[in-house]
Image (cartoon, rainbow over all chains, first blue to last red; front, side, top):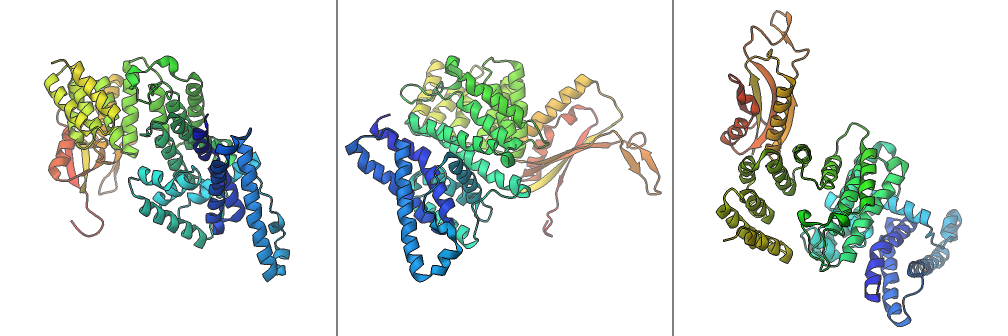
Length: 410
Length: 117
């Protein structure tokens, strides 16, 4: 990895660890200071490395700098406190400890505790996800604004208010009680999946960053699976879903960063190791009596790792989508369900149902209709592909529709 | 948008279907519900079993049933969202129960719990 790539890469993977440990150490009261120290650490790297070269162990370098900065901050605090009150220091011997614990164990614990603290129900779901992207994933304000289709100002305000609230309510950075775990896990899982999708469906051409995001999401989820109190069926289902999706990572993007459609993918590039991991975690998820949306999505993703176009495959996918839509409607699931319907029950039935969806601002809606009409009424098919071409937001999307139109002939 | 109950009425619940028939109906019902859910209009669904079904009469006499003297039985109902009774009726038309001769679908708007109608 070259110099230009390494700092953004390390920012993605290390910022959240450093900031979690710092927040855990300082508490939400000094969250901004924790963020500043973590950001300063990376600033120092970007100011030093271009001139002195990348250190042999860049992560250790970052931890060392972060520790020193934390120590300076804590010592300044100590001097201040000891001047105003000796008593205060005596009653809290912990505050003498200025060494920041950046051991793997403490990094792990701090991140888990931060996940729950940030995803606390006293702040809105949107704020939970926003803060998680900022603190746990090291996203910039602009990237978060993009993810929410909002602007920087709104996001800044939202995060500021959320932090205030966490402070006011004196939220502790800890793992919730067993009785609260299920309820508290839901927003944590939503955030992890959003992070994964940000990488998987990102418009960014930078493959390294996209992969980082996906594998960071997988790592956060793995941490939950490895912890006894959070090792729940839903968590395993989400992990398995992400493994299945990630198995196609190298097959779905070509050398130029362009998307390769499922039907054109080279199955030799599918990662067999991740597919079997997905299978393993899906098995682990098959306990308890709750069928979550992650279970259903993972089962669909499992069938998508079977390339053979069998009746059984499409019937299973159709029924899984039928169930998924009942508990978690989304336009994309509705479109995918209708495609599965055409494969399982035939195009005629699917066309009627597709037209009832009426998702006329969605380019995939017209792409689906084009696909369904192909071979039945090619004129109609062409009309729909043209509409999809118009609505497609990316070059890849437009190219795919152009190829479909060319494929129809005159 | 209002909520409507789509109530499936069977002419005679005592008819026994073959396992293959039941499987086919099951798939058709799931596809029907999936189609409504794909429009984001599905609210909930409740299937009613014929096994252990009882009828309690006004004189507190309890019979197995509702078979025999009662002509129609309710097989189940789903709740959907719809802009109008017409839209709810369109959903109801897709229900595979209607393939059975004499079976009907009843469409009823659900009363809001806030005193408005």
